Image (cartoon, rainbow, N blue to C red):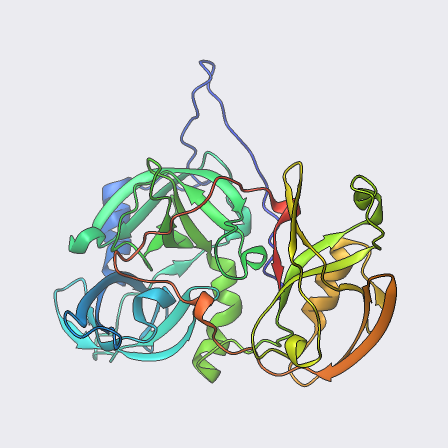
Length: 379
């Protein structure tokens, strides 16, 4: 989890008329047609077969997405929802040549996957990875991909937001996204979002279905962090407690006159998780205070391994330091009583809520809010 919460400099450029101005990356003056000719050969079309075992008819469907070559040995980066659990994955190169692809690893939580394709004697063109921490609001960007199967399509726009948190996405707190108004459509999933230097700063992954040109890309720095794990292990290995909830402070609870303490409020518990096996309790009473929704009645974790949970930064640091196999000691508070539990952390499995459908390749309906401070934390 470390390194996932990126800090991004926000800078909005306004012309004298108050209209946002397109800002090219410094020292990058290459014209867009030339940039497209240089970068597009590294972008590929990905097709796969999806089989729904729960249907009697129409069980087989075709999945279309995008990806881009990132190494001399034929590694292709794309979205997990394009290839995870699929059959007969095929990559179409810029030249039109089709080749079978092997899925090396996928992580549905971060929605990232790595494929490998054969390397011809002349090699493959590869994309240059940039620095997503350096992106600025108003900076001009380009998306290249295969929307609706239309190969090697370029769209243009700006960075319209950074560090966006989508509450309904899996492990939402851990995935701050880049928002762009460059038109993105089903089939763009897994394709590159480029700065004006032609460097990949994001992987296009989703859109707001009810909006006009509001799309999201996974910051490339997040992908850099997991690529080695996906290639080496086929997955991202992370520990599992199996709870979700929010950090709270007792001052806030005085508003509703409930005798609570500082800590992590357990709202829901995942079936089969260590938390369930150790008898932790989730909430049952929904309460809304301003913009914050709470599910009261469950345990409050007041400390982890003797460290109090009284600050968000401390919580993130503690959770981020946990590894599979670690022994964990939790102090729990409920109904004005405390108790301690301890257990060893297993590896987190892929859960049903982690998976995204690719029936339309890139659609991800969302709610209204993007308020980071009250987001559900899942660990």
